Length: 349
Image 1 (cartoon, rainbow, N blue to C red):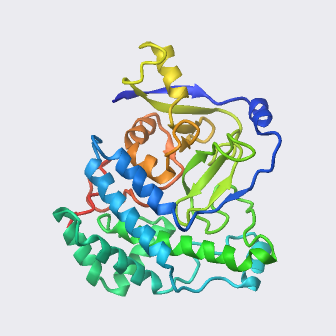
Image 2: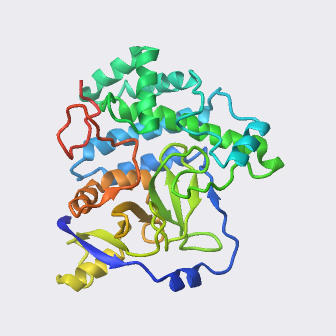
């Protein structure tokens, strides 16, 4: 079990990173898989839930992810940008499906109600009130909640319904990204790089976490995982994901006592931290951090699921004065009455 401390491991030098990444073709984008994206997340959440302090919450998130998978597999009737719109976005250097600016079609309300109806038969009693409220919520409430989530303005956000509203928006934006790819790839890459490397090139959202890929021609490369549309885009590991500095980067991880490798002293803790599947990459220049998960250390890691399950790491890193760069739409904090540092209750009234 994790202790109330963390261990720090310095990041590799730029020379080591470049040497490891040399050779092979490395795609800039890693596209979400329509048939497996949320299903794999649900499986990971179910794997992490037993015995976890947030086990009930993780189990509910697993059911929600499974419902998201069914909704994404069914498809969504929603407008997407055409070729000229993609060209204009590329010329302006802006994401073509910008979360804050894209005109949301009411189809996302139907997706939300589909998720709610899917969850209601087996959801725990503590969640039924929230599901019932969303089933009958009016358009004004839903759009106000979506505005808060997609702009990052937490004032007025209903924390109890936020994970469910976010889940519907994730389904819609992931569907739109995949449809743009399907319809426009023959004319060239429909999405391009932005001047701002720290946000998603497709929708402009912040990442939830980053993932080190273990497969492909260049294993060991880091991709940022979008919190909204699930696109992953490459960023070299010598850069801070917030300020892009190449100085003062370090990894922190929870020390796990049931992993005895390296002994019980500080060196042993550092050795275990260096092998952790989930770490926090911190930057001494801007004092921000972002979680990083390693598929070479655990092939089943998922940026969203493992981020949810490692809240203790966030609390410990934040105590050192670091601010989080990424966002997990399944676990938000805002102005409504919620104990500081406590996860939102999906069943709160």
